[in-house]
Amino acid sequence: MLRLFNTLSRTIEDFKPQNDKEVTFYACGPTVYDFAHIGNLRTFILGDILKRVLVFNGYNVKHVINITDVGHLTGDQDLGEDKIEKSARLESKSAWDIAEFYTKAFKADLEKLNIVPPTIWAKATDHISEQIELIKQLETKGFIYKISDGLYFDTAKFPDYGKLARLNLEGQEEGARVEANNEKKNPTDFAVWKFSPVDKQRQMEWDSPWGKGFPGWHLECSAMSMKYLGETVDIHAGGIDLIPVHHTNEIAQSESASGKKFVNYWVHGDFVLINENRMSKSEGNFITLTTLEEKGYDPLVYRFYSLSAHYRSKLNFSFDSLDNARQSWRKLKEKFLDLGEQNGIVDEDSLKKFQDYINDDLSMPQAMAVVWDVFKSSLADSDKRSTLLKFDEVLGLGLNNISAQSVAPEEVKKLVQDREVARIAKKWTEADQIRKKVLDLGWIIEDETFGPHLKKID
Image (cartoon, rainbow, N blue to C red; front, side):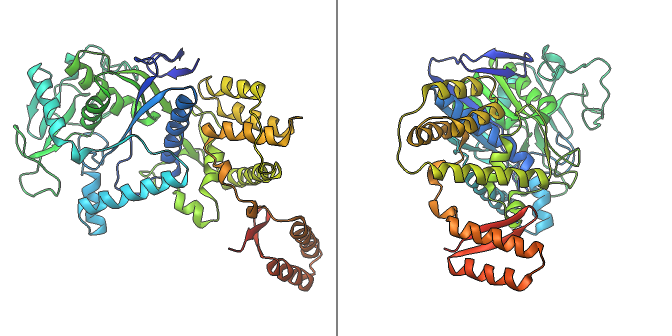
């Protein structure tokens, strides 16, 4: 049985969906005002692994990822400039063009990482009417009040507010968790509809029963998840940074509107650190997947690297550790190709070990250890191949797509070793002659920090 750590209970629980073999799964998507960084992408690798594990266990998964293209302000809450409109101003483009450009870039990153697309992509701007209807429900039930800059949810009227983050609301100071707004009744109250400024026209604004404006950031996920997945969702995933505000507010507005539990299992991934600090756009210390590609890393190296740490542990990123992951990834590909192209039978003992680990709160480092154990086992090569291909239904490393051309023949490998000996002895002429021989055989030698790398000439 699959067991998952539920942020709501802070315990690992047996996973039991509402319907026997049908799972509803909502994952918070990006705010499309800039490129996603590899810390963001780690969260989507988590979502992909989780979905693959569910499918591996025989579940049908209805999966929704939202695209936030309006309403997310620079303060992450209810003050400041809309991130999309700010980016549009800085890049001298329309807000709609900015959102479209970075949405395409995000989806391209997911494809490079071999992440399976969701069942439904849900854009906030495509669901304005649903968000307005949700506000109406909340207003009818007395949860909404109006101040000068918009409509706000009264958190004092939701007794369980803060239960996900276990917030201590006693003595909560305005500005400690939220920006100051003296008109709000409670420091934790949040906007569900913001009014457009009276002195200028926004690029993204809509008419509503309360006046022209735009939805608050938190509203979209409640409205869209309930539209596509029902009032109670099996699994809701995202990064741990979303727990204290965004997901806390989603619960408050959803459960207040429906009177039902919003989510049964909350799954959150931890941060990627760089120089011991959280990687984030606001800190300006982020690295994109494109940056890794420009430095010569296959995006799947980053996926492979992400499997080295449990999703609830911080991943300390460095290029040294990524280089080590690249070496291991190349070794794995070489070993896999050495197994040949004939399939055999899946080894049930290895499969059980692998499945036990992935079902134990997605313990991917231990699952990867089983992969290496299969290579070292006494199984027939064809059985090893079939077993590893079965594992790859979860790992998503694309083992079946590895080309034999990506591994050099022994003659070429020997020449590379000879060249390294010549380079160490500073026999540069001899080293250049060997490089030319390798080139004549159809391979390019790329000198990298950890040693030479061979690349097949297309």
